Image 1 (cartoon, rainbow, N blue to C red):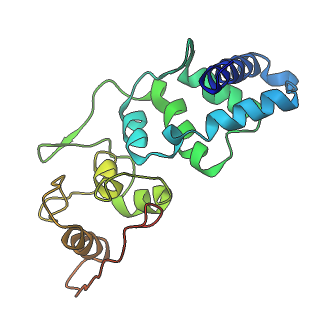
Image 2 (cartoon, rainbow, N blue to C red):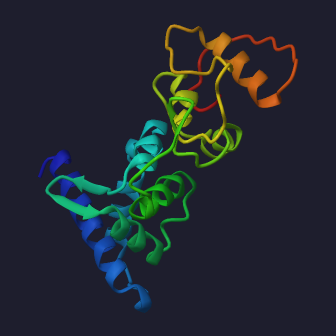
Length: 196
């Protein structure tokens, strides 16, 4: 088998064990070392670390996870991980929390000042919760969270616009979070995907 085929086979095995664990929840299913490694490899994939995925999961009302030829309902996936005690890993926890809650989201969403918002938490809280997630564009570290933010962002200058230089966007963010009249100076070194 090629490396790609091995990855698909182990992903299939991981998703199947997670599905079974969701069903057997009260009995605490056991997993062998090979299956543990398959689940670990699946959860280490970049998908779980991307900040834009959080936005998609937060807005979804139904999540279907598909990997190779195997697919699993998002709620079942999260329940199985919880049963196997895998849902407590930091980067996975953020995604699984949003995926598991999808079935409980209302069919209607509020529009605030003509802007779509899920109104989950303040922008500051969201940044604090999800600052370790990765983004190709550093702007996405902020823009991906706007649709989940409960704040009124009118007049803040924090709207999706990739033409705005990062330094200016970051200054606007700091001013918005600290409120009032603040003076903010920034300098940009080499961009680090791990930090905002």
